[in-house]
Length: 451
Picture 1 (cartoon, one colour):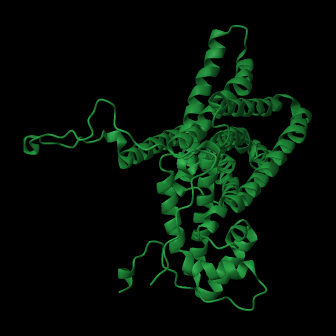
Picture 2 (picture 1 turned 90 degrees about the vertical axis):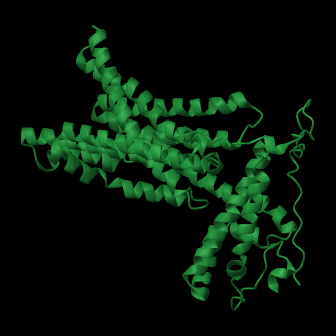
Picture 3 (picture 1 turned 180 degrees about the vertical axis):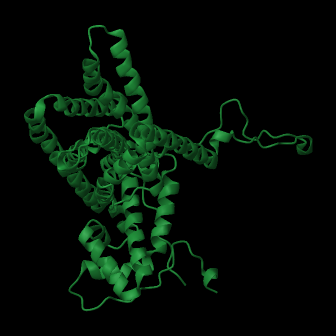
């Protein structure tokens, strides 16, 4: 006979419980047709755009079409040989940047679909819109403003129009995920990761174009070696500043992350935060583009006094934010200790990346790779549960809060038998051996299931 299931924990104290549903006034609750056979109800089919499969197919088709168009445009501008050289050289920083953002996101990893969409949007859709809009705006300035020479029009396009257009189209990916994948958008770290990966895709395609064009000019002029335009473009865009585009867009993602979990009662402030982040990103982008017109000394001054300090500050902020999110598990998992879902040592163990890694190693050496994967899944579920409760505490519980909470709790309980001894031993490493995994039934299991 199993012990009774742990009782449901009380509602979040900061917000009153939701009122029970009441029927609309003037509509009798017991109203029903006297002859049901006379009525034939035909269920109404939802519109096609309400289907997740249809939306996914449409989105993939749109991004694929943008990818084909931008591929053809870049190849037309650079030539086949220039395109291949640009592609080979532009890919160098991409794995490093993606690995850095995935490392930052390892506390509660974003679904791979969101990350793939962000990169594809930046590499295909955002780049296509930016190239078309920048070209149109620059040509319009050169044609309609007689006081501007073609060179001045290009300068205005690079320092004023390009930052606005490029940061806006990159921010669109963050906005779309914020609106339609709100469940996965838990805070500042998610905003930084999504914005950074979107900008990484954008910078990749842009680097292919710039390096490919530089290679074409070198071919026409007969330049080779380290003094060539290709080598200089590669050094500036890939070696010196691979973080430039991610740095700009992260400012927008940071603002979206703050708006996701702060100021629930101040709607104007929450709406203004993303615009403020976008404005800051545009300003920094404009300063960076304008530095190329200041000569070598001016460029290096902007690079050393503005870009590097901002990059260092945002890197520190991202790591500090993730550390604070990790520590929040100790607070928001405590109610589940009181109700029996978690053991007293688990919130502290789950709030330490070192303890998590030690628990994975113990599980792998004791029970094999499957147990190590279970420990990873258990830690991710507990983190999602803590973040769900944190968001409900800060912005109020959503209507699906009880359902999501119960789903996470039951999945957590399902992974408890293989993970409990690993976390127990990782929390107390002086113990001489890892205790055997207890066979704990999930809450709510009736006796007849054991017969």
